[in-house]
Length: 565
Image (cartoon, rainbow, N blue to C red):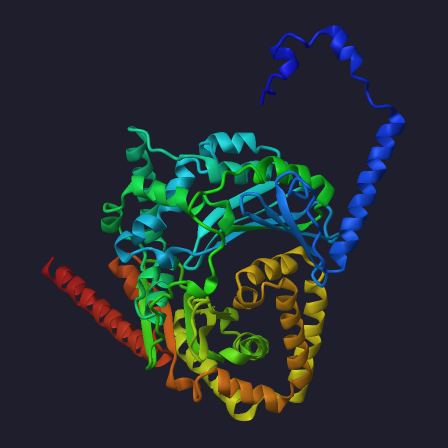
């Protein structure tokens, strides 16, 4: 931007003689000034390492655009608060030389939207990507970012909004420019753009509706979460009711208040190199008057969901040519809120144990599955929930031949049932502890692990109560150490009975995606291939009998024609 004219230039005093009177600092003076700045920075860092706040200078700012600074010594995170209310967390690591993970996160998402406007709000991300949410159309932005190692993706979930991505240390300035443009650009629909945007959105929905996996997973979520509207996929009829202009306004409001966002940098990021980028692009994002700062996660609106009380078994038929079935067994999990952090570690060990047993049985012993995985999910539970239990679920997913799906579902439930009744062996517990120790050592050497700890920590209930990120980190470490010290075959068996429904067959869902080949002949062939062995033998004998009868009939007809001749 052009500089403002000086007073000397305005009144005509900017003459050559006047400029010569302004003495330039010598090299020695510049070196002394640089040493003073380094000494002051070292003193500030020492105060931060001691846990104290750096005092503000007379102008009220530590650096241009920065009003406060804090250090978390255990996590080695430097936290800044900018003049517009935005909070920054910076963790420098030396794990990878060319990686910086970046996430801007804000509390509050689609659960706050009225049901009547839900689809309009949920489509705002799709509309924004088509119109150019970073200030440029997608094709123009692609050309501008060509050759750069940089990717940013805005999204909105039930309880939060985020902009996630990664960048090379050399491209952090461009990443900050994109965040600035996202929070300041005004997306407006031009008269000719509305139809083209709607066509592209409709084509995307039609492609989803044709995708067998999309149909299957949508049905699984609707069954497991009691037809919660949040998981109900948008239809073409609902798309026609979407107000694109309102969707643009919602997208603008969701990402326009910098005071609601915490931006986390993790990786090879040097503070001295990042500070000019912060003051130039992030601190200059205009504040949103009357919007306030970060929202307390304890005030969020929870989603209305409930796991089925009785077992549900269902086949979802989809149009597919490949003879492959995907099954998912889901069981509800309830954690005691007071000890939820410790029980999360117990649940992680139980899932790993169950997955190992299933791999041994289903894949290596019987050879009936292609893949098998066991995972937990707690994304539906709102941070504002205050009930005695924290509800989530554990899913057992595997792919197999359609003819084996019923037997394998029964075998998976029997494996969990046996673990609840007999517990694991000492050898299995020793293996779990060794693998957990190895994984922890590897995780603590990865940027993604610490990045997730910081991002999730700022959104956690613990941080809302204490305001201390180190307290969140201490709770994670101490709870893990406590669980690892207490883990025995008996204690793990007790947790398997407490965390999962006991008996496990009393409450679960088993949803299977069954291929449905197109055409009558294809479906008949598929039915024969997926039938039991006895049924296949009976059909084969019947077919052979029909073939013999048909052959005899043809021979009789031929002999009659010869006799007539």
